[in-house]
Length: 335
Image (cartoon, rainbow, N blue to C red):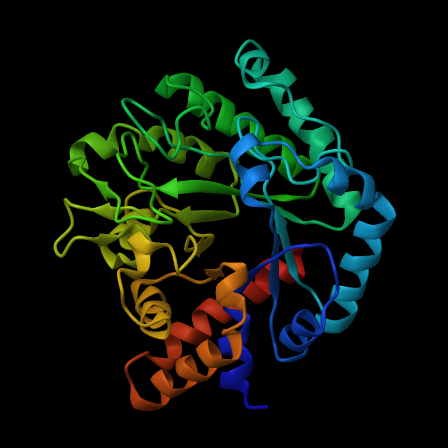
């Protein structure tokens, strides 16, 4: 296998569900894949509760067997899961529970940090090393996607809570991910299934960036770009494909960590384009890690080949792919 092909696999970030070492996962890791995201069902995502069947079957021992086998096959890996205060806690029943959002808002920063630390210690014991949390969006109006799923509707309180979360999980040796930049204060449509437009001006979006700044200062390891089409951009594109927003993260907010997309086959991200073109556009925009839904995971080999071809033709500069692969490798090895 060529170095470029291995690098192409390494920037793919597939969601897997259930917790099972399938031939597909083995092939991915054997081909150079460096990251896996442990997903949940649509109902679990909606309710924030793992199913009774999952709670019974996914024991700590099962998590440890899977993560150990994955590391044996792929070497140092990024093994990620959601761990949200106001939304999904993927390792519910395996790692300690997080406080309910109404309780978390009354806790001091030190108390919340300790609660997040204890949860992350359990996550790390299971073999998971990156949490796709906390949510740094602040909802200011109607929002069909994030209503009830954020830390707080108050910017200062959300910043305090995000900072405490990041510090707590970092102290446990687990990484954290701020999501979903540049923030989604209001949203009228579901970005996964509809074209959802972020109609806020850049000045309005900046009002919420203090939450992202607080998480960055606290030591967040990654930032997930959002799915909605940002109308204030020229041209208007999903944040996950925006070089302008990635550059803003790097230059204005001083973020030096890993930048990941949301699911590339979200309708608001893909917008009818071939999936491989979306993947290459995201890399060119500066994303390091490309999130693939379970459905898109089946096309991993096709996407990796397309990335190699893009490097060969010059439509994706080789240094850009190399930089993304290095960032992933560095974080995986640090964990």
